[in-house]
Image (cartoon, rainbow, N blue to C red; front, side, top):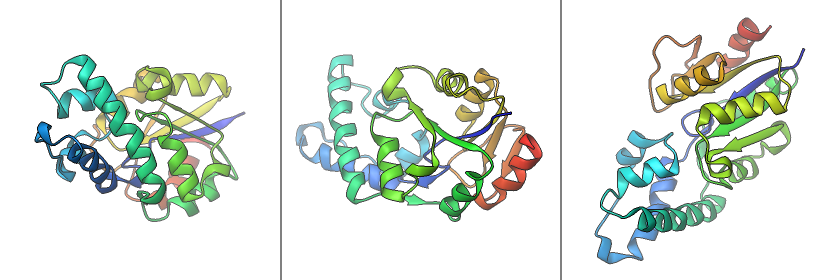
Length: 211
C-alpha cells in the first residue's frame, strides 16, 4: 500500500512573507507612479491565495491585462530574490521531512507560481526527499484539483494533506484527502481530521492517520 503526505508551502514548511514583501516592494519601487506599498500584514492576510487572487487583492484598480503583466513581473522577480534571500523553515521541518521520507512518499502542492517550490527545495536542501510537486502556476487549476492530480499520478492508496489555512482544508476536502492543520502557520481550520502545533508532531499524527 502506497502512503503519502502532501504539504502546502507557505505557513506549513516555511515563512517567506517578509522576503516576498521585500521583493514585491522592490518591483513596485521601479514603478513610482503606482504609489503602492505592500506590508507583511497585507501578505500574511492573503497567503495561500492564487496569483490571480493576490493580484485582485493588491491591485484592484488594474485592468486584467495590466494585473496579469504586473503579477508576472512580481513573481519572476520574487523567485530570483528568494534564491539569495530564502524563507525561513519552521522549527524541525528539515529533520522531520528526512524522518518521514523513510516511511512515506512526500509531495508538495501549492497555489504558488512556477519555480517557487523549486526555489524552496534547492535553498533548503529538501529536493531529494520530495517525490513530486504541483502548483497553480503550472496548471491554472484550483488546489483541490492539483492535490487530486498528485494522488492519482503517484497511485497513492492513502494520504493526508498538511496545510495551515481554511482554504487548504477546503482544497483537501475537494480532493477527498484528510486534512492536517499546521496550527503554527498563518490561518485557522474548522474541525480538521488532525492538527499539529509543530512539525515535530507530524510523525505521530501520520502514524495515527496512515498507519
